[in-house]
Image (cartoon, rainbow over all chains, first blue to last red; front, side, top):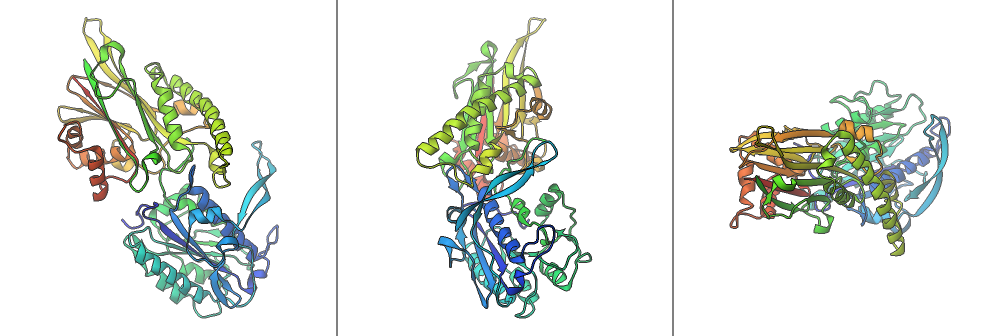
Length: 279
Length: 270
């Protein structure tokens, strides 16, 4: 059965995050607390890296179940978007990511107070990358860059759980049709199945946030529909976890999110017995 | 009626021995035949959830705590739940010492550990007691009683047949989200409600196999294919038989057994 390979230190897999850093990302996404698209995606990356680190944390440190690259594209360039000590690096073992955020911020966050209300608290927020927005949108080049990283990874880890490429963008590619390289990267495979390409679309086009849809009918524009069409279907066990998290799923459910949180994708990955409360 | 216990364990492949996060305890030494009629016999087995932090320590505390309370811990659901909550109180003391120790070593709790520390440690638990009760007719009745939370399992074999499988009957029931005891769960009612119990009658020449989930799922899969996995496990007791590590390594390599911490306790009754 595909997508059933163990994810372990002896059989790790990789994540490649592609981050749109083009000029259009400086536009606000709208909503109650207007935020630039660039800030939304950098927060998403920092949260994803935090979630992955916590998921793989044990008392002796973070285990290298994953190697992760954060690739920025924009400013006429495609390359590592890590800041701090990891600057310039592509795939980095997760333990090194956890030990080397560029800085650790304290942010305020509203959490349930247990009595139906909300109370403000301070949370630790590690930061590996800051918002950047300038230049064009070489998405095609970025996917080709990921293709190169994943291809090399697969040659060294042929039996791994299939790598996951997650593209975070407003979808306005200007170096050609991204659909072709997207199909090419999904044609790469380990012995456990084809590479997964997921997309987080941030947009100021309005409409309701959409998480893991199975059709493009409700999406607001052509960019969203293109990104939906480029996204892999969620493997069955991921669909099951998505359903447990309250999302409506079908066999056509894709790894695509529109103006919503995609951090839950980390929880779709099995690294052992889950720590879930008795219900 | 007498019984003897053999115990086996192996850490997950690709890890190290000190990363083993199952735990087990018995009321009597392994390999020493014991008269059950005198004081009974008890076993506790636990599997720390790999995604939680300090899971092995929590599993070890649970088995030590429950083995000391056999047989009364199996008297009623609320007694079991009481002991489970009592274990969380002992854990609070232990965790306080652990955090202080880490700080003293110059290795304070890191940001990536803190969310898991806040959620507490998680583990499954199965407690089994064997006893002999005098009957009105002058005879006696030997029984086993089992209670637990999660997917540690007990298999009862008689006359070369699997007569009881507890709490799972089907290998597909083993998932990565079993019921778990959480070191911060003080909800006695919920634990009493979610725990599973079973009683079986013991006869001479019966065998009980008590194990954590990877071995249990393998056992049920082999049995489902009309196999007799207990015949393979019985060879572990033979001087010229395979070691547990040999067996588990082979089954893992073939894909028949999941790569996970593996623990087996074999009770032979005669």
